[in-house]
Length: 236
Image 1: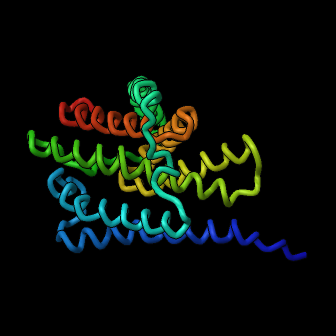
Image 2 (image 1 turned 90 degrees about the vertical axis):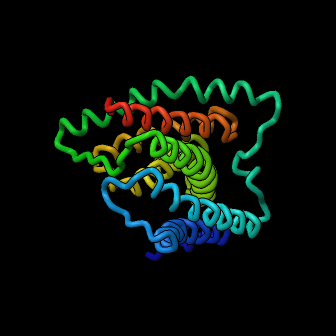
């Protein structure tokens, strides 16, 4: 017996999500071609920053266009900073950083001990390279990825999934985390597993913060900055 067709609203949400998830990596490829940077293991911070300087505006323009099509703005995703919530959100985001770094390290170590691969695709040498990686980690990770995944992708999945209540929230959280983690496959399967866990935590932080993005943005940016500092020091 054939299943019922997807309701129009959910179908439109699915097509919007599919289009964005298809176009974002294509914009990344376009940025690589326009900058002439060769993607390889050991890519430098300056090279990555060149690519992201082109890619980030394109991704934001794409998201703005889709949101306008929906009759919404970035504020609907949680890009909202009411004065009474700024300090609590900032504090909450910072308080989650160290536990998440330790959690990521533990998950990655456990997966590597079980035979999962881990690679280091970046070369962090010198002050300029460290600063370049920090800019990428803060802007591409802390801002753009949070808008895209914690905000847009998560909300689209909420519109698509048939489940209700807490079940739908959990399903959307896990699926969003998977869609976020899988593109990090170039870092190895152990890293993908660790990033999956961190992505779930960031989504829960988003929900815990009243669906405002400041806390997960701060947490993600600080997480990346700490990871880069550890990598530059030779600890990670």
